[in-house]
Length: 448
Image 1 (cartoon, rainbow, N blue to C red):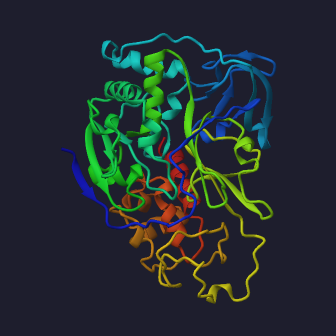
Image 2 (cartoon, helix red, strand yellow; image 1 turned 90 degrees about the vertical axis):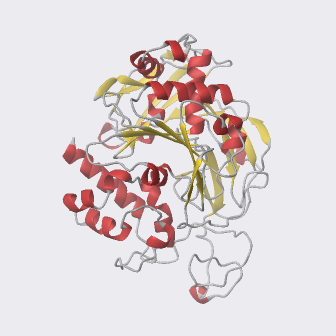
Image 3 (cartoon, rainbow, N blue to C red; image 1 turned 45 degrees about the vertical axis):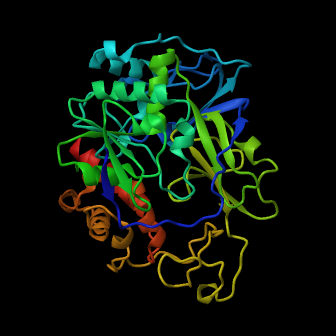
């Protein structure tokens, strides 16, 4: 029986628009765009040029500092554009998809018969190493560093989060193959976290892992919270992190011998007429699932990801590399209220006691309802931050560029997503996730 850890601090944000557990079909697009900025911590160098023909699994670019770390095309076709921004930074690589997907053949492999070096080489050569992240710094894992342990989260507690049980249904063999591969990559343990509501047999009966059950509100599903409660990261240590659907993508490589980056994606949000799940490749254009399926006549916020940590996109945007959720909520910039802050309307929601609480789900928009102001130690972060860290003091140390304090206050354990709820309840309206990312990047530059 799995150990159970009860998370008491946190917050469930009651939003409208949870995905109905129905597979609506497969989404394809004429063009697929891969954005190197999704892969934090790498310096991309092109491996292709415009008019090159590629297959699914052909490297599109590689990391300048780790040339063996290549990034695969999710689709076969022809490279049609390489869009660059300031200082010639690569914004995206666009591939025009062919009528049928052709795959690079990497050969089926039995994980049990492979050495750790062979498993690592297989993942690197296939261009899907980006699925593995590391703490500290929350970046794509450095392949040359051996992790103390590997942590896998098998559930998500973010607002309107997709169901891992539904996504992994029918993919249990791939999940186990992926877990077996990860077990080869560390001399430590592979920790798999599940929810009390988890029913998928692939998660509940997984082998070669230590299963821990986490019970509680968001952010109980965050891998940083799980690491903090199981085995915290100390200075000089490295751990690798993944979510269960990404582990299944790795297992698919070994079971089928091809790079198939198909995700089962939840379409969520209060402004979606028909929610549900769609299968699509990363980089797929999303306009077809929005067409005639979102509220008309108002300004909308399209998000690749969840409302707390997702990335803002436009109606013609693409599915970003790590996302298994797409959300549509009201923008709110067309709403004008006199004395709105003093309203007692039942449409208002507050994590504190500003407005009356009603037992229902809310249609919240993207407005901040206030501007940035001085940070105050008010204990509001602590109420939703279940890690053994002082969040307000850590934020202050990052703003002050005090590296010694940052280390002492536990920055090695955190990622920007761990502060998303703090940002939601913050009366100072600070961009805490951006501040934490800045601190992690600064520390990484100093320490490496």
